Structures are given as C-alpha cells and as structure tokens.
Image 1 (cartoon, rainbow over the protein chains, first blue to last red):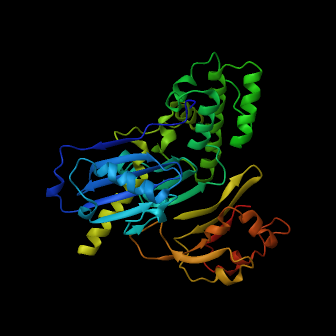
Image 2 (cartoon, rainbow over the protein chains, first blue to last red):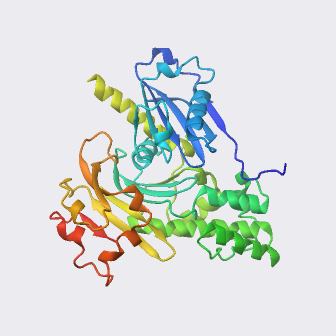
Image 3 (cartoon, helix red, strand yellow):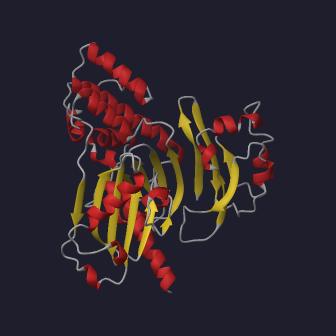
Length: 288
Length: 95
C-alpha cells in the first residue's frame, strides 16, 4: 500500500512520579473529536496520564481505546475513576461518561491550566472545525464562535495537502519556510477547490514547498478573518493539532501581530484536560 | 458571555449572537420564530452554573442563512420577530 502521508502518530504519556492510589479525586476527560480522540486522567487535579488516538469510523470504540491506552500500565481501572466527562464533536459517543460538556467550555478551561490564567483568547484549530474563544482569568467563556461548516483552517485540510504533496504531515510546517520568497496565498477558501488550485500550481512548475507555503498562509489568513468577529486580546494561545504546525502558527502571529503562548503540555489535549478539570469540580460539588 | 451561533462561508457571516448576561431564559423569542430556530436550554458553556439560555437549535446552526431568510426580505434589522420579542435586547443578528 502506498504511504499515507497524512497519518500522524498516536501517542500516550504517564507521570511516573504520581502514586494514584494516594489520590482522593481521580477524574477523567475524554474528547472524541472528528479526527482524533484523547483521554486525560487527573489525580487531585495533577496531570497523571493521557493518550491520543485517531478516531476512525467507530467513535465509541475510539473513546474506549483512548481510555484503555491512557490507563495502560498504571494498574488503574476504569472503576477507580470517580467521574468521567465526555466532550468534543462525538461527546455523546463516550459510553462510560457520567456527563457531557460542550468542547467550547472544556477548551477554555483546559487552556487556562495549560497556558496560565493570563490567556484571554484561544484559537482551537481542530481536525474538522475551528473555534475562537475569549475567556476570563478563571477559564470561563466570555465570547466564542465556531466554524464547522467548512474545512478551511482545519487539520483535515492540512491532511489533504500532506497527501497531495507526499509530505509527512509533521514536516509541513518546517518545509513551508524553505522558499525563496513568500508566495501569494492559495485563493480558494474551500479545501476541495484549494486542492484543485494546488494541482494547477504544481503543473505550472511550482516546487512542493512553495505550494505548502501558499496553503499555510491561506489557512492563517482564513482564521484571522474568523478571529476578527470576537477580537484578539492578549494573551493569545492556539490549541489543537495545527498548533504544532509552525508554518501556520508563525504566519498567523505575523498577520495578527501577536505572539502565541508556549506550553509544556501537548496542545491536542486541551479539550480532554478541560473536561477532566470539570469532572474534578463536579465531584467536589457532589461531595460538599 | 456572548454566544455566536452560526457560520461564516464564502458569501458572508451568518451569526445569531445571544448575550447570556442579558438573557434570562424567559423564552419569549421561541414561539415568535416562524422557522423554530431558537430553543431554551441549559447554558452548557458554564457547566458549573445552572442557568438557562436561548440558543440556536443544532439542526439550524449550519443553515441559519436559509432558516432565517423569510424574516429578512430587505436585509435590514427591522421587524425581526426574535429581536423584537426580546425585552432585554439579548439577541443580535450579524447580517
């Protein structure tokens, strides 16, 4: 079978320094997205474990798989978790969730922990939609909008280009700067038409990197127009898979004139992390 | 909180914004909409509070340009039933 260049790596992580048996509240968030699913486990609000996997065609199964992989090797079982919150596009498909919460609230809450309380604007560039969120110092949503009608500005659009140009998706960002001069952005907004346009550019003899640069810059521009509606207040952070693509992030920073915050956490776990924090808060509320 | 329901596409911006600081969940806007676009539901953007808010139904969210078109013959903001019905001025249309 031909190599699939869009196929990003799945991963999991565990904090070996935490003994979960000593924890009083074990909470978890599962974010079933259109492209990837994450499970995050917190012990008393400290990040203990997480896993990120591709969602595929069976959302409930992907939620179970992500959770099992996060639990893997810890000795912890699903029964040990006090509360699970499901979130994301497929939040109703988390079979073991105690409650579901919209991903907008979860992303704001998660980013508040990941990037600190100074975050006021969050841009979540997900697999199939793009969310712009304004929040307060506690991670409470103040203003938001979501665009999920169109794939421009999403990870799925980038996957399409990785495949078209036979470039592994992780390398796209770096390669987009390997151009003599910055090309005009791809003019089509729609991913399908953008792909058609890119095919034309390749036929005209454009090198791959130049086409990548044109697409990254189109994606950045597209998202800026979306952010215009809610306004960008500092500090600014990007979550989701595209946050790892410096080709888009750097162009976005340049166009907005705002730096993005860096985090020691993985940008893709923001939704699940926020869900796990809500799960913890809900347990505390119940125990009161 | 300002909740923007809708989308942006090649033809423009189509958002109905609900200001939850003004909206008290009274529901006056729901029956006046000829297309049944609005509903009252939990404010799940603030999961730890338990207040209600007006919101655009999920099935209309991605097509409100068309759902709302009968009320917008002249593309102005006058005489739009949901906006008129809201005594608290919590509803704004972007187009």
